[in-house]
Length: 114
Image 1 (cartoon, rainbow, N blue to C red):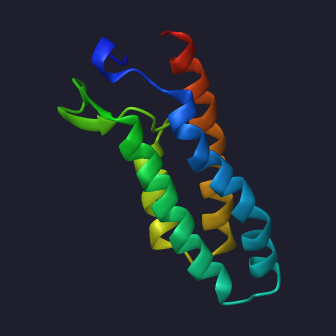
Image 2 (image 1 turned 30 degrees about the vertical axis):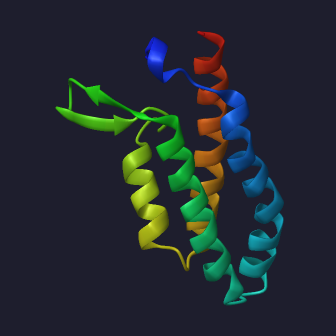
């Protein structure tokens, strides 16, 4: 849970989601057309998602014994690695879209607890 000093600021995070929403249709179209621009745009989207995670902060996970991004959804670390490793695959786009959707829901849930 976010501490008093590390609260989730929904307004601060919204530009990352808005940027994804503005990119996702183009990326989907590039993949459908088998256009190499899909990978270029995905790199930008991956950077955007990573910045979102950074902005959301980290917390120590006792079960794993390490710091983890607060906003990562279930199996988020593995799923994000899949996106980065399989960037040329349409499935990477599908997974990144799911990560953004689930992260947005998590932001909403954590922001309510303020």
